[in-house]
Length: 86
Image (cartoon, rainbow, N blue to C red; front, side, top):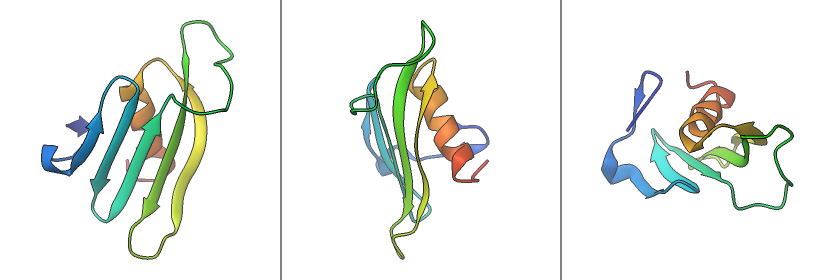
């Protein structure tokens, strides 16, 4: 799967549905989902996603936020952007 200029190999993707994305990338754990308790999107046509990117080795969280996006691919891109991976 290609996100921006980054490629996540299929063997490193645990879950990839239209509602949830869970994968590992270069020692980081990436989790994006629309199943959360942070309310609905402010604008019509958008979906609110919860995004987490954290380091397996030291447990430091690089990105932990919610954002309104058009689809899960856009939300994954925003999670990578939030973790300064793009």
